[in-house]
Amino acid sequence: MSGSGRINIVITEKTPCLLEPRKIQVTAWADRPLSEIVPILYLAIPRSQYAKAFNSVTFTVDGKLITVYSSGEIKLGCVLREEIALRLLEKLRVILDKAYEYYERHGMPDLRLLEARQRLNPLEIYKHLPKTNCKGCGEQGCFPFAVKLANGEKTLRECTQIQQPKYSDNKTYLEKMLQPIRLEIDML
Ligand code: SF4
Image (cartoon, rainbow, N blue to C red; front, side, top):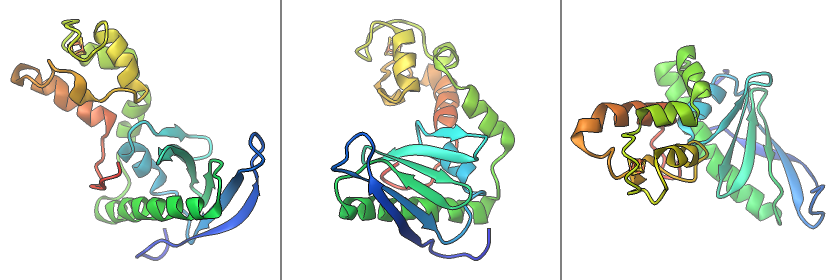
């Protein structure tokens, strides 16, 4: 990655949204390639999706989909007005800056972390839950909870049992798998 400091993002294209023509679809570009920080974003943003073929990562900010490509291109989901896109891009810029700071301090993340995160699925989560089926999380049992945890509808904090000291290893493992990197940003 060339240069350091604050990343700038500019909107380069606005087109009508295909499904909802009253909204706009926004394309923007960062002022530099983002290939080094795409894997960091994937590991730091819960429920993000990584596309290895494009080295891109997709996640939501304020409920809106954002895809960040290694080239520096950024695609936003459809929004009603440009001000909304600008607000989202400002939040994204804070996240990118933090990811870049992480890269400068720690370098690229270990590929094994990426592989482990990609393997994370409900069954793998279930194996590390207490498996008491106590329903303390509001689900019918640990497996339905694991499914919801994997797709982001639940958080690990909602499992009442795993907070007990006897499950601390399981809790640490799952926390590490669900969010291997922490960028210390409130919105994540
Ligand atoms: S609270 Fe935890 S242990 Fe109890 S059913 Fe839910 S996931 Fe399982």
